[in-house]
Amino acid sequence: MELNAVSKEGVFAPRLMAQSLRTTVDEIAQTAGLGRDALVRSSRVGKPKTQKRLREMMEIVTRTSPRFGSDLMAYAWYRSTPLPGYGVTPMQLVQDGRADLVHRHLDRLDAGVHA
Image (tube, rainbow, N blue to C red; front, side, top):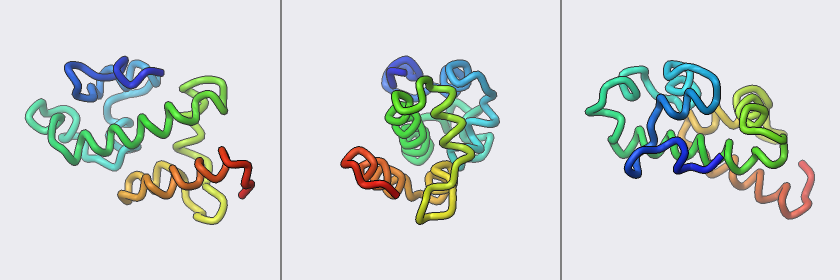
């Protein structure tokens, strides 16, 4: 998935994200670690914290999509598979503001280091 396919005028659009991942805006909020209001109120969607979390989530899903064969499978992995050594899912790390740990894990896999 191209990141620009889920954004409008440079701002991540929760409805486009939900459509692309065949889910709801409420679930997008939850999986990004945001409150529902952050995605349904137009005054809050563009806020830096909201956009940062949406970007982190979509970067991880987009980065892992080729590994799993589809965006939907990558999104399922993001939500449900604990990372070795961390004991929590990528979703939980993003919710805690630790997307960097997910990227480090993926960098190690890309370098051929198996967890």
